Image (cartoon, rainbow, N blue to C red; front, side, top):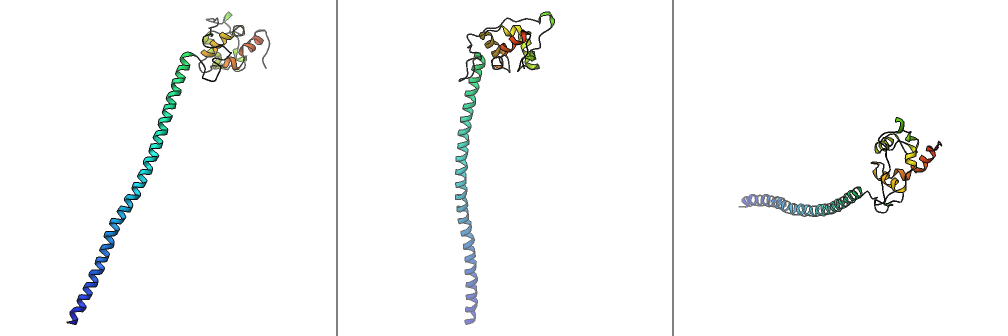
Length: 180
């Protein structure tokens, strides 16, 4: 009968070891998944918070872009300068700007070399010619209101007449002088 007990004890030990291994595996699966789920939940919450922050910042930026686009459109429509600047260079405002006298072609078929005015290059000279200004004496006789009109109508070069003092330079050049 003792012989059967040894077999039974060995069987019990094997079954206990198998039960322990099975318990560890089941525990690892259940605990590991819960732990992994809690880690993932934490990461998900952090990512959601970051996404919300980015969305808020994006909405703020979109609102600022829309505001600036509206302001730019209003300025372009009215011919006024941006807030904080003089309304128009030269001290005139949009209501005081008036178009100077223009020519359809240069007198005697030869325009003055307007590039001699500091700040005027080939592109700007062509634009000024397109507006009807070909000679130094035309520019030299501009009033503040006329300067404001030209400043507002120089596409891509707005404000250059006032900034570069074209009228003073043109007076010197029209009288035969030179600008250094």
